Structure formats: C-alpha cells, structure tokens
Length: 95
Image (cartoon, rainbow, N blue to C red; front, top):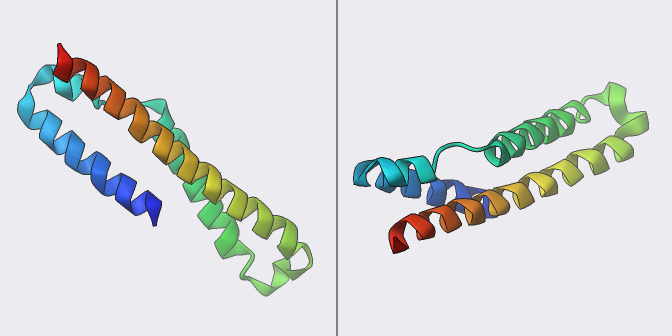
C-alpha cells in the first residue's frame, strides 16, 4: 500500500513542480533510485508470477522468498527516493 501512496505523492509533486518553474522541475527530475525501484519491482513481480506455474513447485519457497524480498527492497527504494526528492524541493523552496 505504501508504494501507491508514494507514487501518488511523487506524481503530484512532479506536476506541481513542473508548473512552478525550471528550478523545481530540475529538483524532481528522474533519478537512479526510481529506476532501481522499478527494476526491483518488476523483477519481484516476474518471479512471483512465475512461481505460480506448477513446473516451479520444487523451488517455489526459495523463489517466493526472493520475490517477496525484492518487493520489500522496492518499497524501501520508493521511500528513499521520496525523501531525496523532498530534500531537493525543500532546498529550492527555502532559497
């Protein structure tokens, strides 16, 4: 659930910043944290969907743990990315 809230918050912040001018737009430009978050999220979902197939039942527990672990990493990266964006915005707003 936290990922959706983070996504909505980041989308709203980006739209608002884009309407305010170039300094704020630069502050919320896409960074590598968001790209890593997306990569871990997509990898996690791929693993979790694959283990639903009956041919993966023998190694299902190991793969399920890896998939869930990557999902938690993705959530952590999402929160970290939000904090980084908010710090950048705060610096621009205070100046």
